[in-house]
Image (tube, rainbow over all chains, first blue to last red; front, top):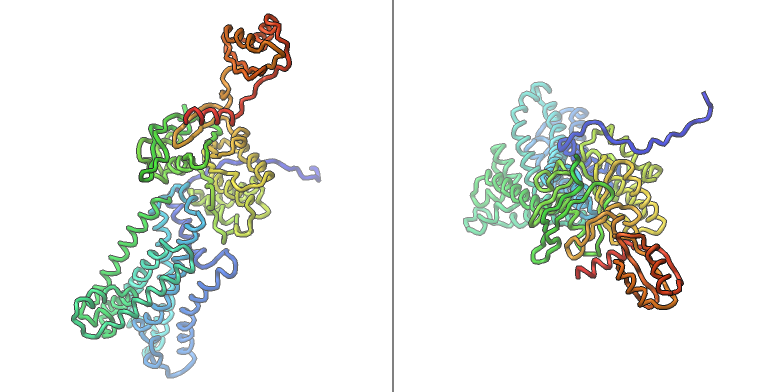
Length: 296
Length: 303
């Protein structure tokens, strides 16, 4: 055999293997969306914000759980919101607004701004496929963002049970449907408005900022509604609190009463919060499809 | 028999009162197609309709035998598209995006990785594959756009102004790459307002102006009949009359004549007439009809 190598010009090789169609494209879009949201395979600065937010959600919960194992005599009552899944939604819910704002704008705005939608238009992908894949990515990531710290706490609270961890786990298991349902309410309740803003935002920072300000504004305005008000205008305004509606759903599912909730202040049932969340999500979906049909 | 590349039947597209495409009809065969027209002539709109992005206001179109409105997904699985602007996310590496672009067309991940590597080598970006698009020059971005258009092995690629914004060296490289696609069995439809570029890469020409097709023919039939330029020393009017009397088409400017014949050799005819009229010969040469000549004459005719 000659010691010298031989260079072969392989030219162009056609693809003769299988093609996975729209299912393959959908999977690719979800994987790509996840990477982009978390800054994976991107420059270092792209990782800073998402991972800082993830750390801010997980580290306190993990720290609390670690303490329960280190310090003797710690009870559930000693640890404030960390002692109750329902109360912990007040911590993780507010943080999830920031997370969903960032992820949604990163997923939707650059594709439009940099003309990447033209590439999707030359693939076996419809506008609905693209939007569903993006929505699924946002939903899964936000769901995990909320549920992982909740799971960590779930095990931590169970470990504090006087009869042992297994007894605690079986005792707290009845809360799992409420935790999952409330998490879904936060995912949809905060995700849909973020999606709507990102449909029209021209820059990531702008879309993120507008969404966060709007959410906290609706919270602040609703907070100004007088308690026990019977005025019609307040009965209309209260359900429009995008910030508080997931909390109303939480109260409904956990069968709790929080007099600070806008719906409670105007004597409306907390399940109305769930209805408003669904209506908002449907409106967002219709607007999204109308907008993206012109591009893909 | 394989279907034609593109079939248009009274295709129209309007944005409100503005008519971008007006009653386009015709059959475009497989091969390298040049879509020529001035800016705003309707080229990009036509490509968007053919990709199924825009729904035509009237008429119908089929690409590779598939209706662009009824079989959009099946059609898109077999085509690629290089947009005029944008298309590449600044925060992604060339390798990652090519893999993604292939997977979007349903290519399995392992094969997508291989194809991404192959096409980046093909367009000369293999060394740059781990760089982000945000760090690419205009020429590199154009080559990357071409790579994503073929990474999923399409049968037809739409190239919308592929040479826009490139320097002369980059244009030559891109033209060479586009020319090679034919050898890979990939048909191309190249939209451009630069007629020279089309002449060097295409074998079929579709001219569009004001939303109408003004010519749809093979490039080598642009000059019908054989045309010869002749310059005489005197008696130009007499020579013209004699040539016309013998069935030739003649354009005369002073002592210079352009003679076209369809049923005989123009050189024989001219030699004979010059001998009979006693007009001295100053110059005799074949007349070259460029795409630009045809475009200008067609545009003038349609206006």
